[in-house]
Length: 145
Image (tube, rainbow, N blue to C red; front, side):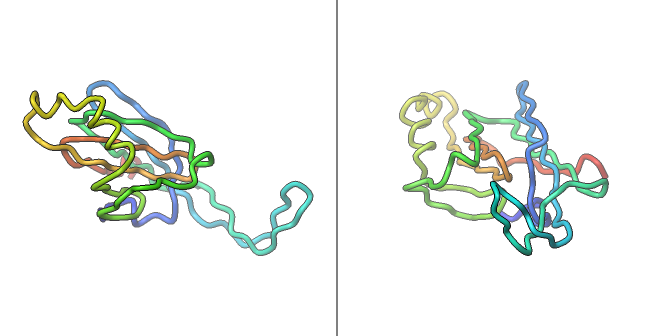
């Protein structure tokens, strides 16, 4: 799903707020100057550190009508077997996933109550992955411009 987030080099989760509406705040990360990085006694040469600065955008991704959501630590997540993506990027839409199957099999009564379908959205950041099962598409806006 093409979005404002595709304009940034990368993003880090700033905060999450939830009270009727799920608001996910992301801060833009930019490439710093090339340098060598020392990690655990080993040197990795010619890397570009990612960092936020005063010109970094802060965006709010809002889901106003949702069924379920979760936040995962990105460093503990390496693969999502069985996922079928309709789109990619920092905001992806999945037509099939283990998480969506879990939500539908354990909380499927919404079909009879709501009489409408949901979509699985995945918001990716450097340290966190947010999965959101929602009835409507999110609204994305810059909040620090």
